[in-house]
Length: 227
Length: 227
DNA sequence: TAGAAATTTGAACCAATGTTCAAATTTCGA
DNA sequence: TCGAAATTTGAACATTGGTTCAAATTTCTA
Image (cartoon, rainbow over all chains, first blue to last red; front, side, top):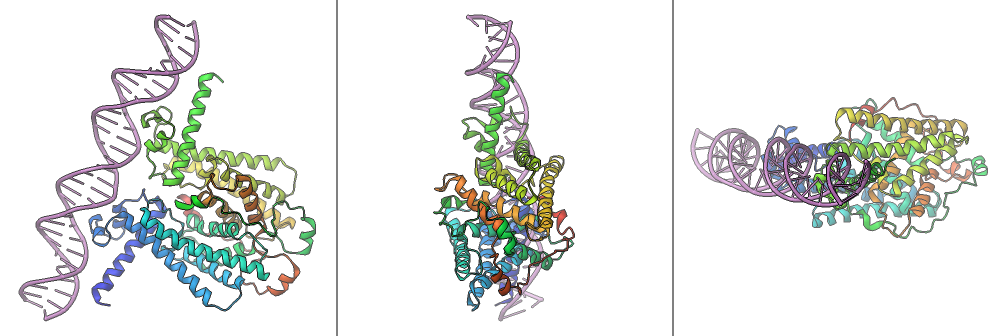
């Protein structure tokens, strides 16, 4: 890699990092090209030397974040552990991505502003991740590590809890990223209910637990185009 | 209530409903006054007869949604059930709010665009809800209904899973609101881990479960100003 | 039904901002 | 060090969209 190409790559990375931070704070439409540029001591005109337009930055930011989580996915898949360990590994990686650095939080960003062509590429990548996640939940249930859950619903709950981190976590907080990540993983994986036999006796009347859930029949799937 | 006042109230409600739907799709800054107006067969000028400006609509939308969930909270608190039943009740209500109608999804909207004065009012209401939620989690843990969790982290995980519904649920989906709500409540309340003694034996090595969590020392709290 | 009050309109204004581009500046290889 | 390539600038442009407001229209009351 030539020296200039390296410079260019660093520059692009810096732009994306600045953009993610700004998008997270003000939303895509609420962020101006000037805001993205100024934290890098640039002028907005310079950004157009690297990207054709603002939407391309939004795309790059999403694409990069998805590549990162998909890389974690394929790493996890190479592992020969059982599904539940793989899932734990993957979730820990996802949390880490949300908590350390800025790049990852793009996973929680809106992408409604993308053009149809770019949108479909992003949605395809996202779906690849989500389906893998559901498969792990499903397998884990079959292997007995987890309760048998509706994979789609459980997956959405999981993703919600994790992606929501982008809304409340701030790297300047007193607790380090590792602390928060470890703590949060415990919560998300452990769930809220006690696991002893005593509880089972007291709470069979629990109305909503679905032991072998009928698949959710693709509810609301077409709506996932935006945001 | 006079006839005109009623008309006015309905009009305002319709505006807010249209606004929430648009904000959810395009974000606050990505939504134009014209978009809010057009689904009501109005022109954007008319909106200024009811609201001074766009930001006031954003405020009203948040304020209304928070009032609604806080009303559910005080209803639940009047109940004489144990903490875990109260929590279940509250969560079910929150899910219902997210799933039926548009108004509720404001709970998942960004509020970074609010002026400092309005922002602080919204944040105060939100905190009131979140603290009550944490208290219930804490009490439930002490009473033995739940595992003993770090209330802050567990609360954030819970809110994330629920508020994220706004990103994927669409009322036109094949599964009714009740189906999704019931299913989702089961997932969120039940958590992911099996509860049998067999599991306990196999998984004591589970690395991240924190039985009596040290309080998270206010990690990242100041960051919660935006989004 | 007539006049007053409430509501809506639509055009005009203007600040903000994404984008372009020719010129200036910097970096780099020879 | 020189010249070419890479990069940055800053001003100008065009459009969008929030806001205002006087006039038109509708709704209500006496």
